[in-house]
Every structure is written in C-alpha cells, then in structure tokens.
Amino acid sequence: MPRRSAFTLIELLVVIAIIAILIGLLLPAVQKVREAAARMKCSNNLKQLALAAHNYHATYEKLPPINNSAVGTWPVHLFPYLEQDQLYQRWVAAGTLQARGAGGANSILATVVPGLLCPSDPFPAPVYNRGVFGLFTPDGKYEGLCSYGANNGAQLPANNAKDGVFYNDSAVKLLAITDGTSNTVMFGDGYHRDPRWGQLMGTGSDTMEGYAAWSGGPFFIQRSALVGVNYRIPPTLATPPTGASNPEYYKRVFAFASGHTGGANVSMCDGSVRFFRDSLPLITLQELCTTASGNVANPD
Image (cartoon, rainbow, N blue to C red; front, top):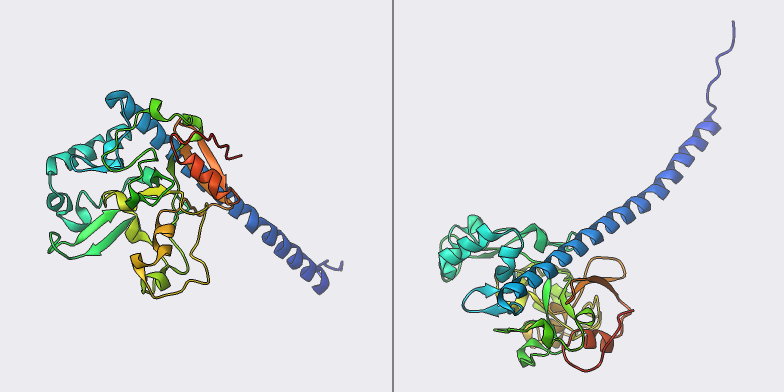
C-alpha cells in the first residue's frame, strides 16, 4: 500500500510564516492606495470649488465673499455652481436662520454636501449637533460640515487686513490679484482633530467638528497663514487661559492642514490644485496667501 505524502510540522510553520510576511507587506500597500485615493478625491473637491468660484466670477465679475448678510457664507454663494441649485433655492426661500434650522437633523442647515468633505478629515459624522438653544428650540441646531476654507490672507481675520482673496463682504476681482492667480491660494484643506484640542478648550474631545459648519459664518470656513502647514497645538501648551483667550486657538482653527501624509491640498486662483508640504516655510505660505504683496512666491 503506497504511503500518503503530507506536510511536516516544519513545512507548515514555514508556510504560515510566509503568509504572515505577505500580509505584513500587503497592509501598508493597501493603506498607501487608500491614502492616494483620498488625496485624489480631496484634490478633485478643491478643483471643483475653484471652478465654481470662476463661474461665479464670470456671472458677477467678482469672487464671492467669505460671508455677507444678504446671502451667507461662500459655500452658499457657490451652491448654484456646485450642482446644489435646489439647496440654494431652499436656502433663499427660507429667508431666516430660524427657518433654515427648523426640523433639526432634517433642516436646511443639516444638509450634507459631499464635495465639501475631505475623505481624510476625521469628522465623527458629517453633521454636527450643536444642541437646543435660542432660535433652535425644540429641534436643536444641526449643521452640515465643511473641510475646506477660503483664503483670508496672512493675518488674523479679526484684523480685517483684507490682504487675502476672501473676507467679509469682499468683492475681489481676479484682475486685482496682482501677484498672479497661479501664485495665490484660493481654497485650502482643513483638519479637524488635534490631540490637545480638548486641553485647549477644557473639554475631553480631540475633535474640532464644532468649527466646520458650512453655514456657520466666516469664522469656521476660512484659512489664514498664521502658522505653517499642518500645524498642531504643541505639547508645551500651557492652560489656562483656555478657548479663544489662548493664542493657540486662532492658530489651530485657521491653519491649512489635512490628514494627508506630508502636507495639505490647496486650490490656486488660476484653478489649479497644489500640494503644499509641511516643510513649506511660513514666509512663503504667507506670500502665497496675499493677493498684492509684490513678492511672487513659489511653493516648490
């Protein structure tokens, strides 16, 4: 009777070891593919925002403001050019913030616009529940979120320096960007998580989704070159003071940042999309965020 061949214990262990090695090699590759896809999706989102802004400019001969009392924030201004005309019409017809927030999680304010969300921005959910208060009783205020911010310039927005492409009640024309549209930032990535955010704010949460509502006023959806790309609150953070009384608050809220490895995506005023690396000098970023400094900067 012939003997049946079979794996020895050593051979079996070798096979298991080889499989383990292959899995170990495969996982980083899968992660890299996912990150590349997320970065590409984010880049496309910013491209669409830039194109929408150009179409707005073609209609009104100016770029939209970060915010104005007549219409609202820059995403609202751009909705008709982002295939969100129905949402825009509902927004205008509602007329008041109370009407726009009526219905809580089903309100106009709670609408999720996929093109405003970066896949690498770690929101727990695309809608933020701000709770029941003021006009938003009994439904509560629910807000759709936005990863991206409009370029306000190189200074603290409260300074009202008007050196960026967008600011409150702005009406900037492309021809006024004398540093060159290919050398000036239009929109940029944001990253809404920081391990020390909870310490800064006196809460236990490291997420910053409360500062990302597309409808929530200019404060939440603008970027300024106060700090370098992908700035994080330093380990040496000293509190108190907490919240807006601490300078780190403004640096972190307005920072160009992302969950992409090594940098963040931005769209330029000529419609192109660039990847700004973490190593980009702050002075260069500041020159790229001003419209008429007279100093033409190159992010490369």
